Image (tube, rainbow, N blue to C red; front, side):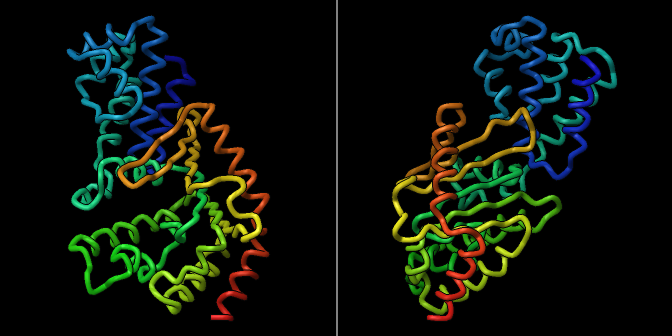
Length: 297
C-alpha cells in the first residue's frame, strides 16, 4: 500500500466522531480498491474467505459486518503484509463492528430505517424537504408525540414512547462534537396544520426560531404560491465528508424506503433541492414569517 493509502486508513480510524455506518462503508471501499489493484475478481476474493462473490460485494458496500479473520485473509491475498498497515485495517474492523446506539431501539425500528439512522449519524450535511410535518430532527417532544399517537393520546400505541425516545435521541447529533449541517426546506402548509393543537404548534415554531439561530442549522419556508413546483414529495439528501462515500437520497414511503446513490438520481434531486432553496423564503425572511405566525396564534 502507498503512504497515501496508509494515511487514509489511519485518518479514517482516528476520526472518532464518524458513525459506524460510515466506517463500514469506507473500509469496504478501501478493500475494493486493494482487490482491484491486485487484479482479483470478487469470486476469487470470495474463495479466499470461504464465501461467494455476493458476500464480497456486500462487504465492499459496507452492507454487512466484517470478521477480522476474513479481512486478514483478504489483506494477505491482496499483498498487504506490513504489520503496521494490517493492524490499521484490523483496528478499523473493530471500530466498524461496534454496535450503533440505535440498536437498543430495534424493537420499534424497521430494518430499512436502521440504515437511515446510521447514515444520518455519519453525514456531514443533511438537506431535507418536508411537505407535511416539521422535520424529525427539529421536532419538539409534544409535536412528535402527537404524530406517534396519530393525534389520539387516549389510544396511544404500546410502542409510541419508544419511538418518541428514538426521535429525541436522533436529535443529539445536531449538538454533538463537529455536528452536521442541517438545511431544512419546509412547505408553509406545515405551519397551518395544528399537529397536537395550536399551543403545541406555537411551541414548535418557537423551538424552530431558537434552533435556526444556530450556525449549523438553516431553515427555509416554501410559501404557498411557490409550493409544489420543484418537488412533489418529501426527500432527504445525505452528504458525507469522506470522498469514498457517495451522496445518498432517502425517500420514505408507507411500507419502506428508497436509498438512491447513482449519479443520475443524485443529479435530479440535487437540482430539485437547488430549485427549492431558490423558491423558498431566505433564512432571515423565514424567521420573520415564523415570528409573525407565532404572534397570531
